[in-house]
Image (tube, rainbow, N blue to C red; front, side, top):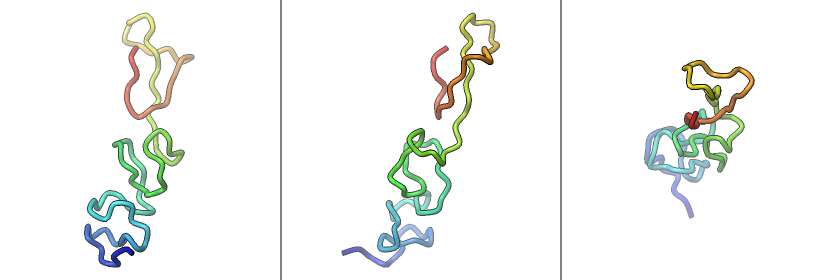
Length: 81
């Protein structure tokens, strides 16, 4: 059984689908962000969630501090290079 009481005050109880009713940053309908938590309660976290906004990083293969526009990667955290 689940509780209909909203423990974290985000407006959604565990019975209504809140995946972490002790963290007000995680509830159905919330925006997924890169923080290693399932913010929108869809069981997908960060890069695995197609709803998350990723940062596009460009490889600086020659270390001139300018990225190569032909070599990019969209991730939550900056990759090496």
